[in-house]
Amino acid sequence: MAQTICLIPGDGIGPAITEATKHVLAAAGADLEWVELPAGAAAAEKHGDVLPRQTIEAIEHHRIALKGPLTTPIGKGFGSVNVRLRKTFNLYVAVRPVRSMPGIQTRYDDVELVVMRENTEGLYSGLEHQIIPGVIETLRITTQAGCERIAKYAFKYAKERGRRKVTLFHKANIMKMADGLFIECARRMHEQFGAGIEYEELIIDNGCMQIVRDPSRFDVLLLENFNGDVVSDLCAGLVGGLGVVPGANIGDDCAIFEAVHGSAPDIAGQGIANPLALIMSAVMMLNHIGQTTPAEKIKQAYNAVLGDGKREELTRDIGGTAGTMEFAEALTRRM
Image 1 (cartoon, rainbow, N blue to C red):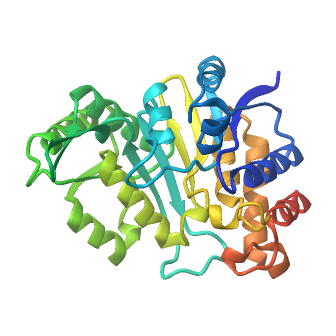
Image 2 (tube, rainbow, N blue to C red; image 1 turned 90 degrees about the vertical axis):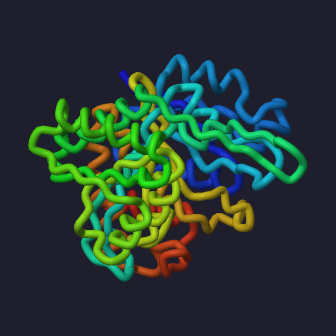
């Protein structure tokens, strides 16, 4: 039977890159049925909510989704829809694989690491208020259960995929209780689930310096929510940016795969956006649901297109002249 996927096209360039992604998945022979759902700024205008009830109910039923980028206003307006989705479906781990891509020239070669970020707690709990005019208090929430489950996931992920090492980034020299708890839980989970996996801890400022000095010394990075958000984008910069990096939000019984870049309203509707990040996220989704053959076809196709470096097949952000669907068509020709 075909796997039903909840599809959230998103804002800005989202509809264009999701359409291109669907085209590539179909060409690869993925056995999928789509349920298209509203969310984001456009949904607020039409449905009165950035995350309408119909979207929540559909994901509750099908338990898997593919999502385009969603707009989050800065400093005002509605809260992050991405954060609401993670909390609503208890998607406690964000998985961001980062690897050097064929034909994408950067300062580094052969980067191959995975950022594992706690996804539901920390500063992104969204608990902040004004104490007195001019003074804002923001609360960070850290629980033993939250720390244990993300650390357990990281060590199990490393073992199942043949990774060699997990490195925890922290600031326990300053936040002795919160990050101290994170470290304590990770050490326990390493003892229980990390046999054969090397484990190390680095203060995050030193860790960031070490990443830009030599990213090859890292394998799986384990971080709390805020630090993980920052470091995952830093690592994307090692391989060419957010346009060539996929992402997944995973819980015990639900998963949402997404392009981790923004909605790029400045180029929306022009047909020039690069759909690669969402296509790569869809490959992660296919592997997650066991459709590994079409996943491998697509991966080989985008590796070939990038490696060939033909300007007429690459989008503008990676040195080409192709539009969104032209890039998708280049992948289908390789398949």
